[in-house]
Image (tube, rainbow, N blue to C red; front, side):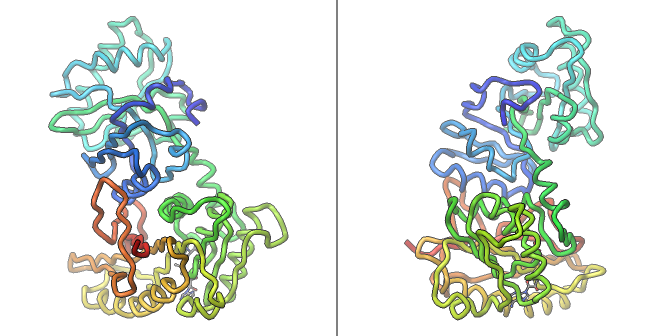
Length: 397
Ligand SMILES: C[S@@+](CC[C@H](N)C(=O)[O-])C[C@H]1O[C@@H](n2cnc3c(N)ncnc32)[C@H](O)[C@@H]1O
């Protein structure tokens, strides 16, 4: 992937100690990174909701490719005291990779417009003083060049964000292949955007499961099969369950499409109730469970807090019974990844469905070095009044 960058920035930059990541899902993406890079993350900081800075013992490009919750990766090259501070090392690095008439951009996260203008002016002055008079500054709306545009515009993109009382800057050295992720959601035979999560989020949840190719994942509320489509693409064996026969057919159709075949190779989707897994699976245990039940009626407006509480109470019953049934159907080291709803109310409250895994002998998953509070809230992927949060459970050691 690094080789596909329009401006191939040296691999050595990947060995940087402090790597800034532009996050797709806020805290949940930090959890995903700590899970993927367990052992090599020494510190993780979140200077703004969209950015995390990871101090690592070295980034593995292979792992990076599977980090679904990252929009961009940039080593921190300078930290300025003020927006007009000296960008010397960064501009030196940029001038090594820019030619006359090349595109470049400055993407700001959590930085005000005046500071942004000052940063741009200082950067342009620096590039001009190094003889680059005709480089083209792309000025994206909202002061952010989206990762896909970085590729399509062939831009050397620099990210900027508040950091330790100053402003950190670094060049984007890697962006993910978002097009294939999007296609997975829109090109499949039954897209069902009204119930389905995004393929990107499905990949994040699968990463949190810790599964390796060849292992078996179960989604007992599989709907149209978004999670299982992504699982099948990474060579996992897939089991799906849904209480509605129509959904079972839809999921099968989507999964056949994912493997480009007419046979049901590598997956088994059945009609059934998630609360009865031990009976349905006849005691077989799976390697991990990844699921998004979200059992609420569609809301046309923010409900009152009391209505939201009643809705959450109703679905909590199914969630809790299903969680007990999942705990009985998982291998000794398997993880259970479950999405729960958070309802925004007209009274300004948020009502969250909470799950107690301890009563079932489950622990909350805590990859080092950050302590995560569950359920971990997702930023940036919500339906209108219902947001998502995620639990990751694992059995005790
Ligand atoms: C939010 S949808 C899942 C969406 C899915 N992630 C997708 O990509 O389409 C929840 C699904 O759970 C199913 N469901 C509801 N109660 C169930 C139960 N007790 N057992 C199994 N499935 C159930 C519904 O039919 C629905 O398809």
